[in-house]
Image: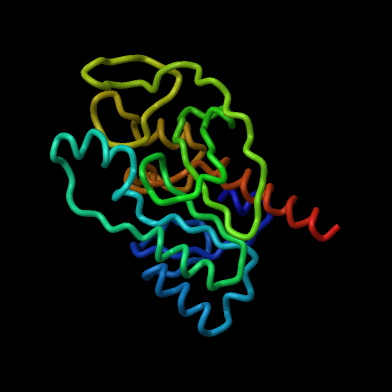
Length: 213
């Protein structure tokens, strides 16, 4: 949605069925679909590719609390294969991952406080074939509401993941992230705020215009 608001036409891909996705999309393996676009030459119709590989393998929650308590299972790491294919496209690209140990070059980091949102949702982005300046990261105004390390705190932000322990309700997640087109908890917990991609999309278009000029 953020890219759309920045002026892009959107074409999405997801392995799961997402009937609430508000733009044209393909259901299937994203890497297989990208390979098809490269091999058929259809990739040339695109200006920018944004990829969000599964993050569970190296995200902060997995390598921290969950692993220490023996929670969760085995997760795949597709950052490398995704980057390899994106390099083959010859196009500018963005790879997104949360904080953690993903083998990702952190060319850009965004936080909900930069946009006055009710979530922090820190995300890192590797930028391929283009660059932009890192915006200032303002000081957080307080805690994320909920239990952490056995202590409950109130705060100006909600936790858009999990359930219980003061975690956000679906309406709270929608309002905090600025997402109105889905009320599915799983989709909301995996989403990044459109303010993030709107900022990235605008930065990319500005960068491209400066190059043309």
